[in-house]
Length: 125
Image (cartoon, rainbow, N blue to C red):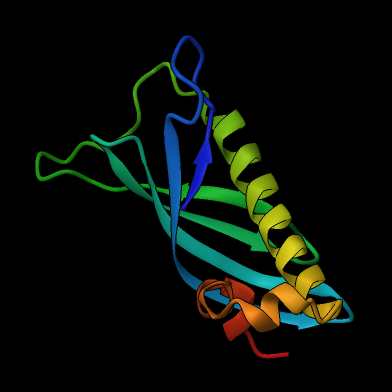
């Protein structure tokens, strides 16, 4: 889970991005593909996607309620900032994970918990 702070006038780390699906290919140290997950604040959860590679961007997919309205975060959440933070956080996460793998880190070899939960650990090279 990645904590984000895209809201004005609220606590830091008020929004989370809980990664649920990783579809990335890594070639020459660069990742390309999509990372998907839930973006939420505890009362509202939406589906988010972060695309890496040639054209990098993040998006929140619309979710319609039973009444036919589109679910959204409160007005305090700056959606443009939220998307920027999602992209930046995911890029940093995978950059750190690939650096650890490429450097053949003793920590990665000795710490099976990190290795088992490291999203990059399960990616095709």
